[in-house]
Image 1 (tube, rainbow, N blue to C red):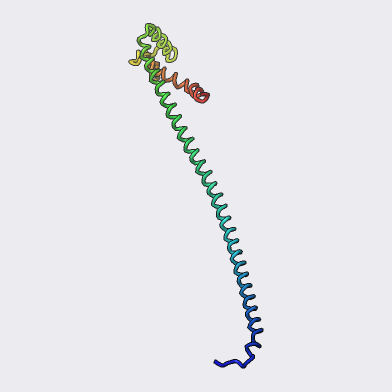
Image 2 (image 1 turned 180 degrees about the horizontal axis):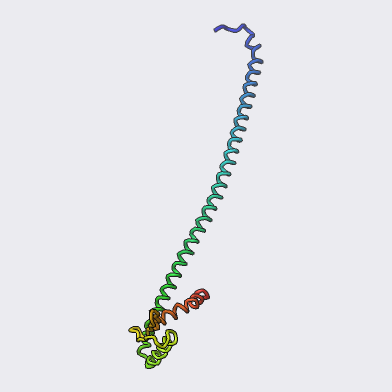
Length: 175
C-alpha cells in the first residue's frame, strides 16, 4: 500500500463527503423505491385478496341458495309422499269400513227387498231371459249369453267408492 502525500487526505475530504452524500442519496432513493414497491405489492395483494374474498362469498351464497332450494325440494317431495301415503291409508280404511258395512247389509231385515230390486235391475239390463243368481258376497249376478252383470254388494260398494273418489279428493284439497 502506498501512502498519500501529505495534505492529500484533506484535499480528498470533499470528494469523500460528496461520495458519501451520493451513496446516502442513492441508498435513500433505493430504500424509498423498495418501500414503494413493497406498498404496491401489498396493495395488489390486498386487492387480490379482496377479490378472492368477494368471489368466495358470492360463490358461498350461491351454493347456500342452491342447497337451500334442493333441501326445500327434498322436504316438499317427502311431505308429498307422506300425504299420499296417508291418503292411501285412509282410502284403505274407508274401503274396509264400507266392505264391513256391506257384510252387515245381508243381516238387515230389508235385505230380501234389496235382492228383489237388484234382480229386477239385472232383468232390465240383460233382458227377461237372463239368469240371475244370488252372489255369495250378497247381491246378485246376472248372465245372458256372453254378457255378465255383477250386482254383488261388494262390487256395488267398490263402484260407489270409485264414483266418490273425486269428491273425496276435493275434501282433501279443501282441508
